[in-house]
Figure 1: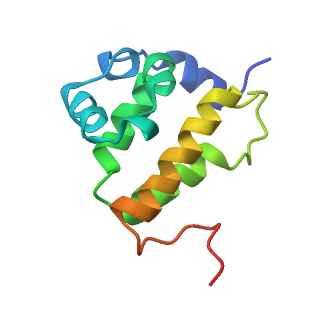
Figure 2 (figure 1 turned 90 degrees about the vertical axis):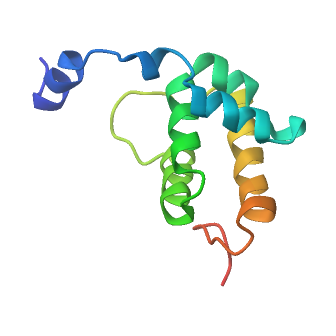
Length: 111
């Protein structure tokens, strides 16, 4: 038996931005230091890299998105990301907070 949320999810069609990197995401990836460039994430989850590229200049929104990706608070059966993806996301978040927006705060900061 499926609920209303399942019905909505199945109705949603994948868009081009769900399936491949857009020009903004390509530019974003090229702008990153190679050691933090999330290549595996870009290959397996281009929609996430597209969204990160869109939010990168907005610390509050980017922090919330990082937290949404990295903090598991779901009741649905999804298992989360593979370890390599988690490592890339964590490295990217650390880079964001130390190099891009050093004053940005996340739920992990002790203040």
